[in-house]
Length: 280
Image 1 (spheres, rainbow, N blue to C red):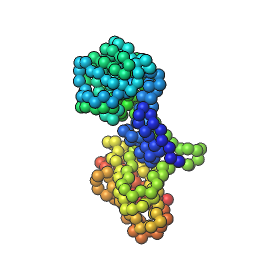
Image 2 (tube, rainbow, N blue to C red):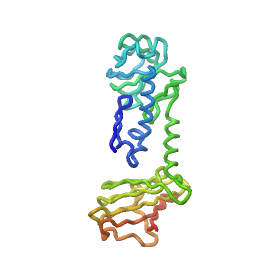
Image 3 (cartoon, helix red, strand yellow):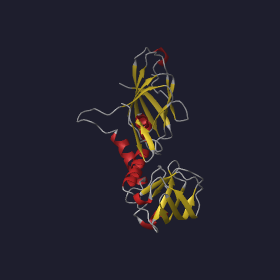
Image 4 (cartoon, rainbow, N blue to C red):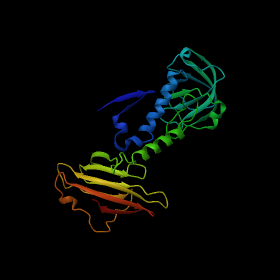
């Protein structure tokens, strides 16, 4: 089912969380959480937005806001953070000098990055420690209590990755992620679910990220030929060598009929060694 939602000026659809896209920090689930936090701040009158085009700089800076001063709780002397919605490395930190109508005057004490015109202005309640907390790398802003979301988002993403690998019943059932029909390269990593399913719509590369030093991870791929058949998946290390089939049991992919299903188990070991086996 298709859907879309707009949070803090950013529109998200089902494509943002489909397959492995949900883990993308800039456009997936972490970005949705960050936008939700900004939206919550707007609803509580703790934030404003502005399309004023300017270079981040210190001293007196003036914004024309989309919100009227009467609806936003930004009063003279308050510490605020100004961040580009599309690039949080473009930012300013300062205090409110005046806010009348839609004209917001700031006295900026810290600035970083280049020109932008998509500013999110937030009011923290955490005091001056904000100046020591640069813009998080996950395109996040502050929550309504003035706390950085970067740690919380990392925790949530890690928890989701772990939950997808948990047993989902009291027996031997495990959650399998279906990537659908693929016609371009796909990838696996220790962070996503151990059971992956895909339908081959073309010859594609199936990449594997190296494990953490000293560790090993396993990935089970259920590979299904589409209505054409005869497509070949090439299992390899990401950007590297093709994996080895120690038992010489690599299927005759090109000879497979439409609808044929094959289970491949990939072992990614220390030293970025990829070994492949036909599963049960």
